[in-house]
Image (cartoon, rainbow over all chains, first blue to last red; front, side, top):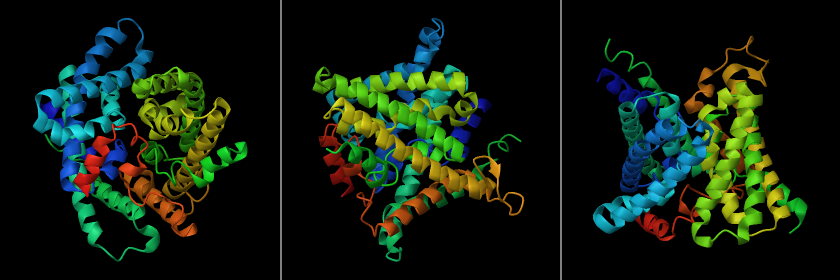
Length: 197
Length: 227
């Protein structure tokens, strides 16, 4: 239990996927203009991360490792994620239209989101157990969601600001904002070590 | 199209990182030193050129409906080759780049060029496009790595320059420094080209390499949602 809390807290706050590991920067910068689309994207990514972990961990342990074909990891994982995303999209469309309406629009973009592939590969290379991997995926997703929502709030304020120098308007000032947000997340380093001290 | 212009447009006019703003994740993550940046750039360039050539050869064979999975398989195959080569011959670089080697698969530059260029043009043109875009990516990552390494540890390509005289600013090696240096680089390009270079005024669907492929409707819906 202790271990799981440490995994979740460290992946949300200390090793936040977006702000300290630079995974999933494209959706972080692209879909964070409005709060509702940012949170929708965050939930969709969390959902797919957990599903992808649930599918790829057994494949690695029971298929790739015993037959000595671990070098196919990249190819197999990206295909599994791509087909999984398609499957989820179709299932949601057919059986859960309300959920599809809120999450479905983001699903095609998630296939090429490096955060999803990143979390599945990380689970294997960090040698986590199945349960730990699932919680790691949940934590990574929540961390992503947190960063998205915080950043959407900041960008809302940024829109009102008219004092930005011409060369910095648009993308550069957005990146400077991201830099300051990631600076504030650095304040969390060491939090996890002190959790059970 | 003029062969030379295909190459030059890749690293100046349509630089994938600094003008088209594609492939931001590796750009920010691996540029803690100039060597790492260049290593990542060259690895990506190798995958990009090979994938462009193969996809251009196969463009008539691949059915339109399943083209994205097909592209991904081709790209993933080449990434695996690069991954194994780096492990065998450059273990230090492999360790430094770590997770971001397998993540070349989901680099939007490669899928974007496959979709926008290689699937429509001849083999030679696609190879040249791969070289141009790859060079542009490598140069951008090299410059960014050089700046961050110089400010963050006072060295350039591992050679000590100011580290003994001036205390290096370690923050530039960390995540906030990455965002900040990238912001300044884009601002400088904005300033130098008087705002003409960057076509994308903000991040959004219209600039996304996947815009044409993510079933269109989802993009327009999202645009409405964010409008």
